[in-house]
Length: 292
Length: 261
Image 1 (tube, each protein chain N blue to C red):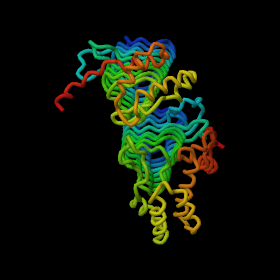
Image 2 (tube, rainbow over the protein chains, first blue to last red; image 1 turned 180 degrees about the vertical axis):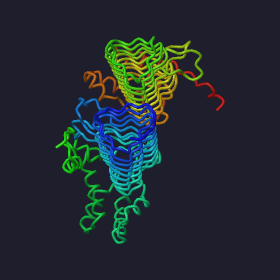
Image 3 (tube, rainbow over the protein chains, first blue to last red; image 1 turned 60 degrees about the vertical axis):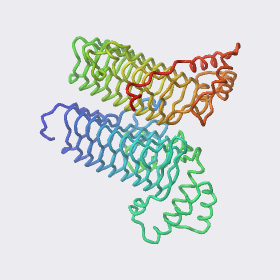
Image 4 (cartoon, each protein chain N blue to C red; image 1 turned 90 degrees about the horizontal axis):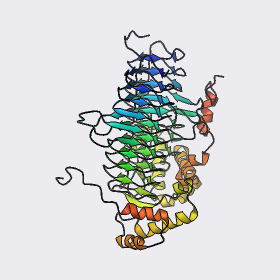
C-alpha cells in the first residue's frame, strides 16, 4: 500500500489492489473492489457493490455507488461496474442499478466524465464516451461507444445515444439520438431537439473502410434530409440493400420509431435489457452480485 | 447511544437522538439537533441552528445549514421528517434576522440541488438534479421540479405543479400547472399528478376548463378578463377558487439592482 500518512476510512472487507492510491478523507465501503493503478484523490466515496477496473482516476468529491434516486428501489444488492482507464473529474456521481432495471449500472473503459456529471441507476455507458460538465443522465439510458454529450445537457430516462453521436451543450434529449449525428435544438424552449447534420468527427473516429464510410455518409444524408419522412426513407434504404454500418444506423432508427415517445428502451421497462444479460453472461457474478 | 464514526467530528453540544448514524468525516456543528432514525453519511456538513427531522437520510458531501453569504451569525434551518437529501446538495440556513429555511416532510432533494436561505419547501415534493431554489422562494406541496430549473427569489410555486427541466420561474407560478420555458409559460394541467394525488374526474375537468380560459400555452401572460369573470362566479369549484386566489397574489419584488441593468 502507498505510504501516504493520511486519514481515510477503508472497510477491511474491500478488495483493493496493491498499488491503488487513496487520498485523504476517502471512504470505501465493504462491497467495493478496486483494480490496480487506480487513483482516488480527496474525499472520494465509493460504496455499494461497486467494481472498479484498472488505472481509473477519481478526482475530489466523487461519490460512486450510492443507492439510486429511484423511488422503486427496494434496497437490494445491485451493482455498479466500471471498466479501465476512465477519468472521473470532480464531483462526479454514479449510482448502482435497481432490481427492476436488471440490477446493473455499467460504465465502460476510456471514458471521460467531467465536473459534476451524473450517471444514474441502470445506465449502460459504452467505451470512449465523453460526458461534459454537469451532464445529467437519468435512469436506464444506453450511451453507445464514442458518443459525446456536452455541458449541461440532460438525457431523459430510457433514451439511447447512438455511436459517435454528438449532443450539444444544454440540449434536452427526450428521445433516441441516432448514431453519427449532431443533435441539438436551436431554441430549446420551443423546439424539441432534433438531428441537425452529421457529426463528422465521430464519422472519422469510427475508422471505417473508405467505401463503408462513403455509404454511411450517403445514408445519413438521405435519412435526415427530412425527418418526417424517416420511416419511408428507412424502408427505401433497406430495400436498395445498404450494408454494414449504414444498415445498422437504419436498424437503430427503425427501433427508435417503434418505441413509445421515440425511445426504444421504453419498451423494455421492467425487464433487464439485452446488453445487461450479455454482461452477466460474460462476467463472474449474477444479477444480485453473488459470485458464481 | 448514537452510532457515530470515530472519524466524524461532532460538536459535544449538538443534540443527537439515540439511534442516529453518523458516517466518517461528517462535521456536525454545536447548534444542530438531529431526531431519531436519521442517517448522516460520510463527509456531510451540518452547521447553523439546524433541526433534522426524524428518518431523514443525508447522503455524502451534502451541506445543510450553511450560512448565507455575509452572515453575521448562524441562521436557522428546519428540515421536516422523512426527507432524502442526496449527494452534493446545499441547503443554506436562513439569515440571522430573517425567516428560517424550511423543508417539509417526505421530500426528495436530488443530486447537486440547491436551496437558498429563507426558502420554504412544502411536503411530498421532488426537486431534481441541479435545480436551484433561490432565497425566499416558496414551493407548495406535491411539486415536481425537474433538473436545471431555477425558481427565483421570493417566488411562489403553487401546489401539484410540474416544472419542466431548464425552466426559469421568474414570477409566481399557479397551482396544478405544467410549466416550461425560459421565462416560463403555462403549458397545461398536470393531470397525471392530480390523478395520482386522488383528485376526481370532475375536479380535474373544472381545473382544465379554468386553465383553458386563463392561459394561452403560446403566450406568457394571463387573460385578465377571464380571471375577473371567474372571480365573480359564486359557485366555483374549491380547486379553481384556489387557482384564482393564487393568481391574485402580489408580484414578487424586483431583485436588487434589476433597475440598473
